Image 1: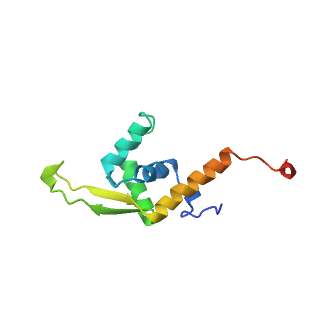
Image 2: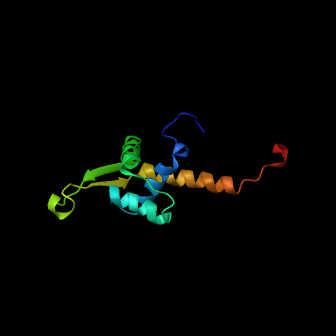
Image 3: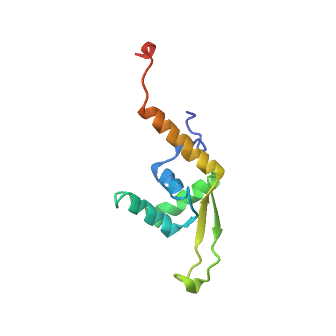
Length: 115
């Protein structure tokens, strides 16, 4: 693993990885991402707005996520427009590569010469 390479999928933090996983099958807005993470972990993993948006910006800079402003008018929700986030092909590849690494690690058996 190349240390210091922030684009290396193996350098994803748990929060970044959680965010990407919430976006795997559908586009979501911020509050929806936070709720998905909290509900999937039965409340054990929660992230707030102060953590969510900096992480989304980092993921967007890395090319793992794209975003767009929603079409709904402000009166339809809380008075603010929603920003929707979508995982990119690079983001999907990063999640898959990280999962493959973790699966390999779980089943790792050293060769006889490595003992």
